[in-house]
Amino acid sequence: MNFSDRLKSLRKQHKVSQFKLAQASGMSERTFRKYESGEIEPTISVLILICNYFDVSADYLLGLSDNPKRN
Image 1 (cartoon, helix red, strand yellow):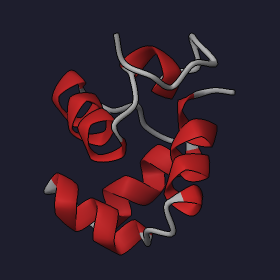
Image 2 (cartoon, helix red, strand yellow):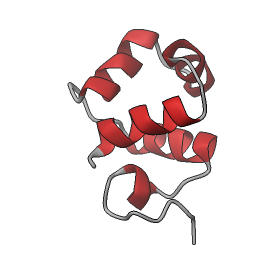
Image 3 (cartoon, one colour):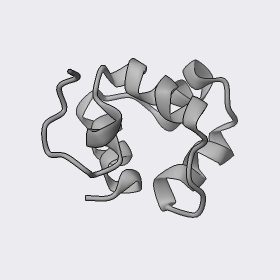
Image 4 (cartoon, rainbow, N blue to C red):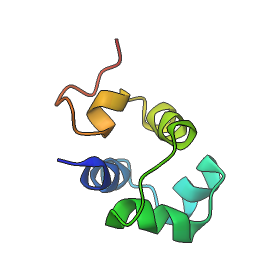
């Protein structure tokens, strides 16, 4: 899985709307939709915000690991 697939999967698992997650991350819903569609990649600061929101590792969110736990 790549970043956009993981992001969409996590959001749906946690039953969070794109709008709510965008608000919590301080970005527009349009920008968030672009992350989920793979149109754009997140900055490191946005990546950290999303990891903290879902309590997962960056490696997991980026598709580099199948283990969501943080070390």
